[in-house]
Length: 402
Image (cartoon, rainbow, N blue to C red; front, top):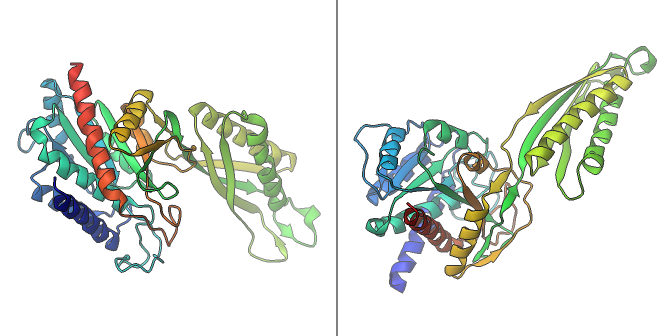
């Protein structure tokens, strides 16, 4: 590819990203985004496979087209029977309910919605990888399955794709997420735990309401909730090893509606972040014990409701090392990033199929989910090239062992 052709290809990805950025859609509502992705894939001659998804797109490059009208999982089974390896690449496509404050000329045109996590960047990068792989489709010793996944922000999309059969026959899977605090040209990858399990909780403390001037005639749930919240912090400091990591954050507390009345109920909620399933279960067990024990000491009860989020992202050692090697061959700088306490539903794929999740540097001024979030689009060509390289080289390694 000449310098002029490379510049044209890079500008196309920028244009795609900006078009997506101006028309953000929330989790489960990505209808226009889905149609736009299908249009770009069709224009490139890339086959779209029907998995019965209301939003989101699955497409394939390489191998043999399946039976017309067959469900995606049935066609995947046919490809496996032919002995062809399959490597999946995933990008998330949904936006967030945030009012954009970037002031960019291509800012969101939809009030109260914004691509504040860079999923538009991920989608454009995967499309760029798709265009590159299509150009050398005849050289691929297997199939690249492209997963344009909806509803990542609600941690529902990955499981939806898994139930549809999108991982049928997949030998390895790779995904990326932009990282604003890494410079462009830098890739963050590590084996094992990478991003946190993200669980939520709601605790309802039941007391006995009374007049605020006569607290002895009731049981104050606010005092109880305050003691529970304080005691919960000892779980991390006294029940989790210093060699492990965990976070318990109470983010909201509500009780009562009048200044001179002690309410009969107090409710607080928040989140727990952990990096291994063992610590995750330990923290949750101790959380319930602390909540019920402290409540009982004050003559109240505490009911804990769990909002189960995605498990920790745990990279396969083989494919994490492989990804590091491929990145270096593309003159990218590879670093081992700190564990991220953010959650990612890519973890559900890694529970089913070996693979790796990577950070790509985008040198942005703000972190994810900020109304002024922005990234350096100069990272798009390199990210697309990395995804294409991961898929192509992984297929070659897998095919060589069959």
